[in-house]
Length: 326
Image (cartoon, rainbow, N blue to C red; front, side, top):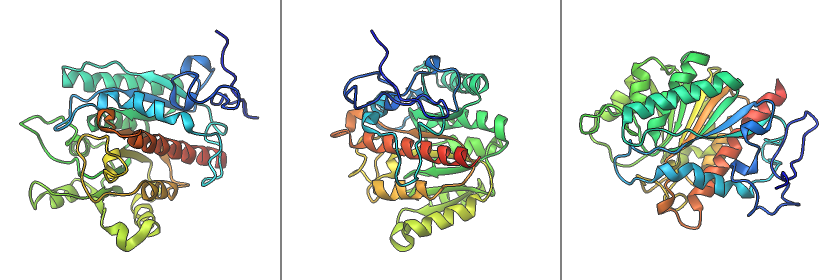
């Protein structure tokens, strides 16, 4: 079969399949129909799938998230007008495929994710944008970030804190990655932040314990009083000039915008609010990102997959803007 036509930028970056030649419902199953890692000579950004959900505490299914996000990304186009950049033209973005990790042994899976992400980063030098999978995967990814950049400021979009200690005595789950990351010295405790937190907690002590672990909190309700611009100001003040790792649990969105997730909570952000805050990060030193907890079995009309794909697209736009400046 003949290779699909792909535009090449003036800088020599190979982009997505040309949708004016090959319709979007055809072509390769990569993210946005971008080239695979083995189809290009180098990579600036690598999109990595981690189809893993053995760390969930309620509804399973996020192991199918990477494929669902990729399928929903077919409608993305080359130019991002809100950021005035071509995310696939200003940098070489590739799809690095999926890591195959043990679905039965949580410890082995975490080790494999860490090893796989480290190997990919070392081999390519690329910035990693990871498609989950459940939020457990953030811990091994942050271990790799710590090796490359030192402790990073974590900007965590989520309905939940994910700084609890254990579930049923298990220290490694999708509700504990940022407690373990803080304990291991992976995060910058002076510059990390949760955005979109809401819903019931286990105890009143959850919030002060979270603060001790190094997180400032922007509650979902504060979008009503601060608006997107006010939230962006709060977040940027908190992050400062630190290297930033962005972790987006899709359940930060209200179930009306993202029903396909494992632990939905009422009263969440709209898609427009989430994308607005992300675009407000322009100029910050983003060193990696993940988008997690997309569970397609609970999705409707690809609402959740489409939202997640656009989150990834905006993250790629931010990375492209920074590369343009550099």
